[in-house]
Image (cartoon, rainbow, N blue to C red; front, side, top):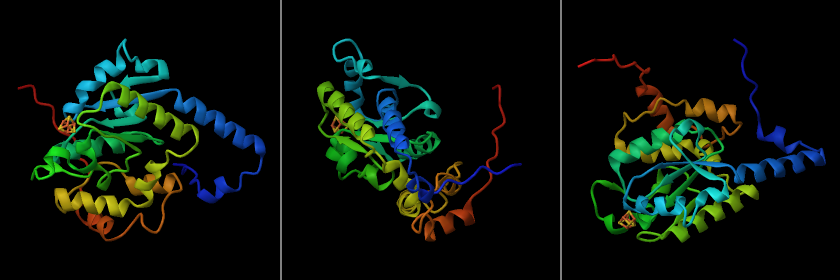
Length: 230
Ligand code: SF4
């Protein structure tokens, strides 16, 4: 099978045609105005999303639409406290989203654990496990704050500053180490993050390390589940 070409940062840096930058700006403008938002409602902050999306605040007028699958989603909303069990699903979901992808932490609980700061079952700092582009703090933030946060993200995308998804590839060993500390040494997902890092040209000195080495020792091939009718 023919191998896909690996793009490198250097190849991007060598772009000299001024029209390429005009085109890049146009793409970023279009991208910032057509965002699919995956909302796996993880906490009480989710209750502010229906008013933010429906007629009164009408988030759709900004070009933001809810999406039910990670495969076509651009934004992952984490809408409140995250239990250890939920965080596993959030990471699985995040890794299935195509790049470029953006994470928004809604509610103070995603910043520092909020009122669950002492809970044994709650992950305190979301950014330890995933790169977060934007926080919308509050307990819980009102729909105006949610819409304002979305506008802020759109601005970051338009100016090329919403790049934190690249950090997941560049510093994968750091994120994986935090995930292993929480979930145990046998933690793994079906996604080939190292392969994707190569593919995006983002494989760097911090992509691999002791934690990815441990992952490679314990990683199991995916075994499909048998369908049972009863
Ligand atoms: S910040 Fe408040 S409203 Fe939001 S998830 Fe935490 S406890 Fe719930």
